[in-house]
Length: 277
Image (cartoon, rainbow, N blue to C red; front, side):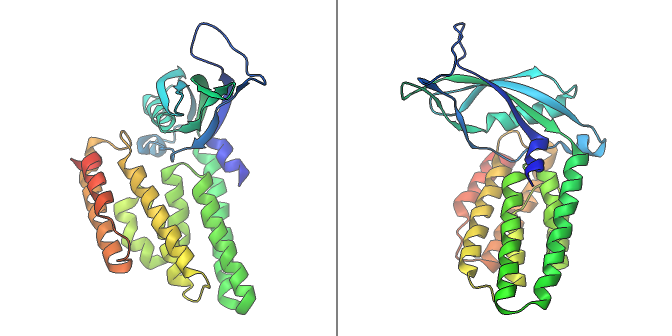
């Protein structure tokens, strides 16, 4: 699984600050540390045309750990890939660099690689592993079955944390969930990763799991993450807004029917304001 993340993101090197005075990280000046990162958007047109490449983006990390002043340093040769890379970098957050314990601005160069072939092979391998585990779980009982269930859950969480490309994440999701879930959601969310479906599928498959409440918490967390992804500015084009409206309503209805304890009102308003208004 370590190879998956390397396909997309490579930090080239740190620069100490966006000034004409060059500083060197030493015992008094510490590097910024990555805190959070969004899912990477691999433009659908680029996927359909089998285009790959890498883009190097430079940006400032503020004293608050936010990214500003992004700029394409080395282009992939494709505007849509460059835009996707720049959007990705804009939504990174960091623990800021520090000098004598005080936060300071810094600069970074970040390489984003778009490579369908390598990631596709890794995803297919993970799908095969999960489906093998499903077969083992059907035959197992007691403690043995519980261990398999925990391994499945761990693999789901690993994929969510390591695969940042939305489309390829969907390949995994629809490769491992049950047919009825796949057929219900694939038409409206083929381009939008719905990771909460992994946990909905798990709850549906393993009703005897000993910690279903924890899985439901994971579902709620992933639902929030998915909605945050859908609401990020710049992720989707004008032509996607009608599809987004259908998807929003479908998510809302799904939660009301299956998980009424989860309150989506504020999140749905957020989506409507940012994505389809």
